[in-house]
Length: 120
Image (cartoon, rainbow, N blue to C red; front, side, top):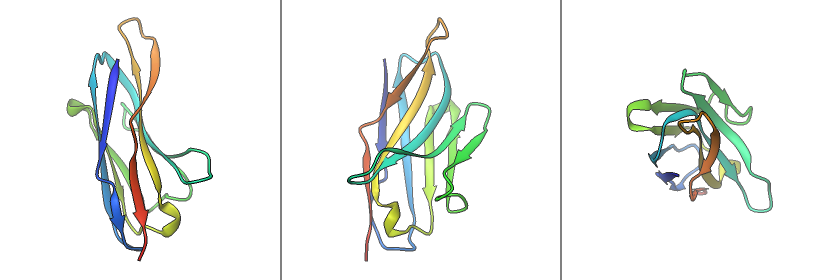
């Protein structure tokens, strides 16, 4: 089992910045991808950004150019730097990790979520 613990959410004014962190722990053999998703009230969970072990990055169009995903593989940690935040960025942000076990079977894991509120 893999556990994901997020931190860094909170209240920020429009135009402000926040940095989210997520640490993966547990029986990790190999992480293939880590990423961030978000879910606003009444909406479906949506992809924000992902990063592969090889460093490939993917962003939602709505955050491209404002958010930056990075990782520290030695610490099994993924970060999301969010700049120029808008009210529509407000949501619960979830960390996601796809980890393979020793038999190379991949499983998706989710964190408990961290609230991001953008309001003046």
